[in-house]
Amino acid sequence: MKAVVDTNVLVSGLIQSAGFPARVADRLRSGRLRLIMDDRVFAEYADVLRRRPFRRYFSLAEAETLLDFLSSDSERIVATVLISTLPDAGDIPFLETALSAEAPLVTGNLKHFPAHLCQGCPIFTPRRFIEEFFGPGTDPGK
Image (cartoon, rainbow, N blue to C red; front, side):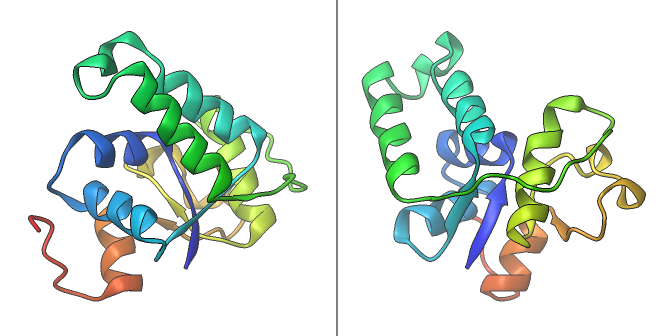
């Protein structure tokens, strides 16, 4: 399975061991889910994971190891679809990447991706994504 994963889901999944974002992160670690990203998406992951507030969850060295994993174990593309507007302009690279790869986008911020602006891209919450692609009743506490 391949998907574009918004930074909020990735970071939440890394710092919390329970919940559906954590299940998304588990699927990444196990290889059952492969991230699709472009350079802008990776740059945002790198920026956020290197921020000082996250040192309480992982060291800078651990963040770099994680970024190395994400870089080497993900599918890199060049987004060819352009989006002119979204409620949060910072989300545009994620939607452009998902549309270009014809892949779903997983986000915790559905309101940032109104259907009329998303050109038919499938947008999922972490819960709906896990249940749809990995089975209903997936226990977020495990």
